[in-house]
Length: 211
Image (tube, rainbow, N blue to C red; front, side, top):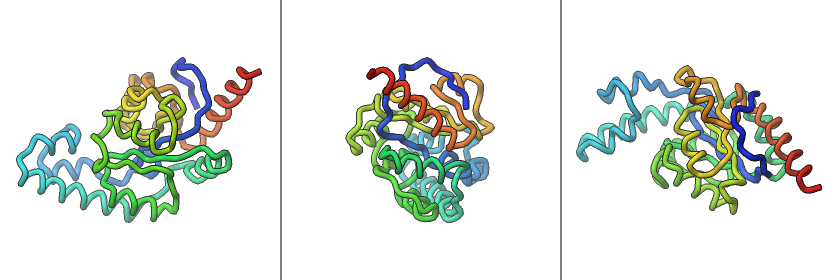
């Protein structure tokens, strides 16, 4: 576990997660997906939005097929069970904000056997790094942005968290990550259960400030 940034500590009442590659072992083969679509690089959703309706429909069919396959074969990320048990025991709420579809997201949660208090998908809000989805999740849980932590495996997750005024944690298992991505986040971890120690430390600081 590494604390990277100097954001002020405060009580965390909710943790918001990205899904693919964060709560789950990465399953979508983005190179194969983009090859099938016919693009070399760049985010798929943003590319799709620039295309005419017929092409958007073709891209969406490809994307949803890959998402469905990944959901069917979802495996929990390292430390997921331990972290969710900890959050439940302490009454800390859990949400997911994902660029995936709602259908694929619900299937993933079913396969993993985990529950969340709020689920925001691409049907509900603009994709990250836009912070709107995170703010919707916080509102659904009755929390302010400053009371939430955003956990993700890519820079878009951290950018969205920062824009929403949230503490951020980067799960560093992705080869796409660069040093500046780590520097952008408040915390960097290798597995989800390392977040338990971060939350305990923040709670101790908050409790100490009250005495």
